[in-house]
Amino acid sequence: MRLKDKVAIVTGSGRGIGRDIALAYAREGAQVVVSDIDPKTAQATAADVAKLGAKSLALAADVAKAGDIKKLIDGAIGQFKRIDIVVNNAMKIVPGKLEELPEQAWDTTMNIGLKGAFLVSQAAARHMIAQKSGAIVNIASIAGLFPYNWAGSYSVVKAGLIMLTKLQAVEWAPYGIRANAITPGYIRTPGTEAMYADAEIYEGRRKGVPMGRVGSGEDVTGVAVFLASSDSQYTTGSVVGADGGQAVGYFLSVPGRRFSGGRID
Image (cartoon, rainbow, N blue to C red; front, side):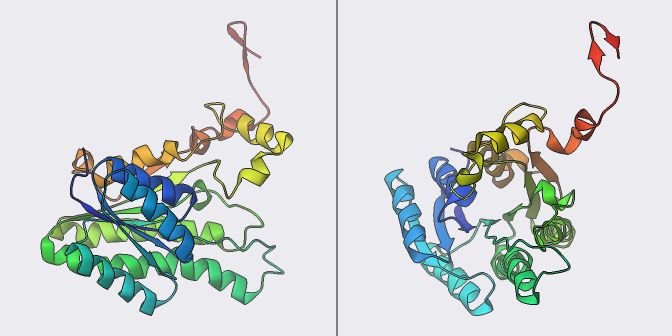
C-alpha cells in the first residue's frame, strides 16, 4: 500500500473525480477526510471509504469561506493528529459569455476553485511545515492551458491554480512539502453524464482525443496516487496531464498533411 497510514484531505469528494480519488487513496491505505459542501454526499463517500477498511471522516465545508476551512483543518487534526496529503478538487463552474457574465458568477468560480485551494493549502501547510513533510495535489484542467470559451472564469481559475501549484512548490520545498497539479481532459463523471449520454457530443469529443476515448475517474486517480506517494518523492512543481494526449494533439484536428499509404498527402 503506497499511502499506508497517511492522512489525506480531499475537497469536493462527495462525488465525481474527488470521490474517485478518496476511494483510491483508501485502497492504498490512507485515512481520508472527505470534504464537500453537501454533507449527505460527504457522508456517503466516507461510508464507502470505511467499507474499504480505511478510517474516514466526513466534514461539510464551503472552501470559499475561511471559517469553514478552519473547521475542516481543525477537524482533521483533532481526529487524526496530522495532515499528510491535501487534494484541492472542489470546483463550481458558472458558465456564460464574458460580456454578459455577472460579477457574482465570476466570483463564485474564482472563490471556490482558486481562493479556496489557496486557503485550504495554506491552513494545511502550517501543520505540514511543522512536521517537515506533505504533499499537495491540485486538480487543474487542460482548460488552464487553453481557453475554455463560454465557461465564465473557469479557464482563468485553472490557469491560476497551475501557477499557485508552482509557487507552493518553490516556497514550501525547504519544508519537505511537494506540490503538483493534474490537468484532466475530457472525463466522464456523474456530473457530465447527461452531456456524454448524447451520442453526437460523445463522438465529437472522443475524436478530439489522440488516444481515441473519453477518460474516466480511474484515469485521474492513478496520477493522484502517484503524486501523493513516495513514488514521486523528487517531483514537485509539475503539471501532469491526464487527457489522453489532448494537450499535445492540437494539430491532429487542423486541416493539412495526413499520412496515407506510406506517403504524406
